[in-house]
Image (cartoon, rainbow, N blue to C red; front, side, top):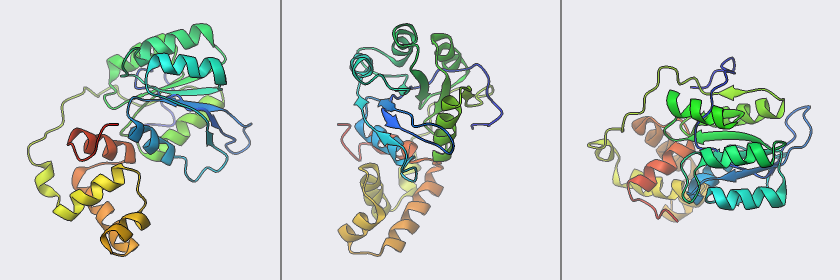
Length: 236
């Protein structure tokens, strides 16, 4: 989990680049771009800022090379980058950005953030590192810290990635919950899902709560990745 005090020099997770305009509190407006090879994950991350009208996402990339081209064009203040991307991974992208565009601050993030890859990301020049499984508030806090010129890193000192069990999680979900999970991962709102199944928004919200409790998810990004891995939705 992210600790506000854990502003250690550790960085190494999937860094997503967002070209966003952010003015958090008394901070100046900031441009941000996001890079991740899963469009649905990019969409989920953006959802973390849905209550931040001052944040405007202006660019997305699906791989490291596309990200570099995007930054050359946009010259954003912040780039949020996934560490595991095709063509050019997040580590190499961060290093190149640190060299070519030092004015752009980088936030690395990954679904498999641990002590080793976090350290590598920091060595490449990442200013923040966060796990995709963190709470949505953690993403906002990481961005605020970097904008303020600080470092922000998930506390993974005791974390070692272990492949999550896949034997009975699906069996815990009801058929309706699986159907709703697939629509959640596609970015549908509770209201839209309710209309699809002719049920109330309150009922959908109850299903969403049950799904997160049963799967142990703390963020929408984690739910999206789970749905992709289980084949509930297309990766494109």
